[in-house]
Length: 130
Image (cartoon, rainbow, N blue to C red):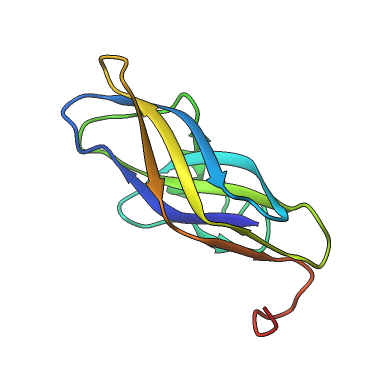
């Protein structure tokens, strides 16, 4: 599945470099892709499949890059797009948060935590039976 709901904003006056993206407390789900995309406060969204149904001519998707190693300039925003896979069939998967590790121009490491919970309902037609 694609989870592209979060926006990363560099509010400092220098570049930051993303080092890692992780999901906290995963149950029946694993993170298999972490990308950043150009954004204007629009996001890729949430989709049942990976990759999301965007073509190479779409500005956000065509500008994607691996999150680890990506640089975000001062005042810039980037969309965070996660590719997630269930680890067991027909079980609900979940994660309690998204954790992004980054470094500033002085090499200091920071961790930003988005308390966005994620549910992955594999093998279900609707969310009604969660």
